[in-house]
Image 1 (cartoon, helix red, strand yellow):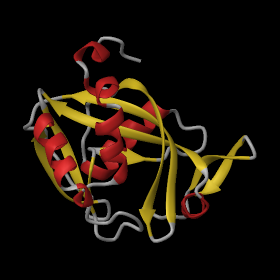
Image 2 (cartoon, one colour):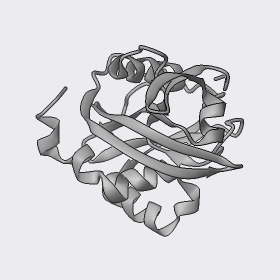
Image 3 (cartoon, rainbow, N blue to C red):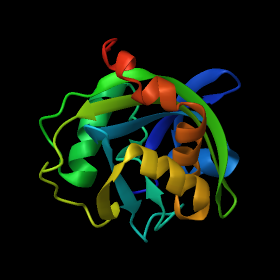
Length: 181
């Protein structure tokens, strides 16, 4: 995906379109979407393509992206699942909003206000990886992922570490699934 797309960011408290790379270079607070696809206790994670302009080759949640200007977060989640992984037919369930700020290397800062979604499926879900976005995927039991992220943080994106350390209950608790969107 091109880095010259416009994303919704706040400048002086006003939401306005900003070029994606500029938002990260300036550390601007901006909108984002994260999706976790689950099969029981397993979560589908992706390894970011080596051509990504930040955090290449690191493991992340199933899908993470920025909505286009005026694009509803749920529609963005569905769109990017298809564009990155070839996943169709799932219904993302909104779990809440998370805000974080993290250094993602090369002088870039992610300061994101993230709408988080979870999708339930089976682990035989057909995938068609977009090589410009994703170099690999794997299903991981949630407890094993939490342990591996804690032991090997340099192989995972900062935001995945933040989600698991600070927001795991909100995102993954079974009671949260009943609230929907």
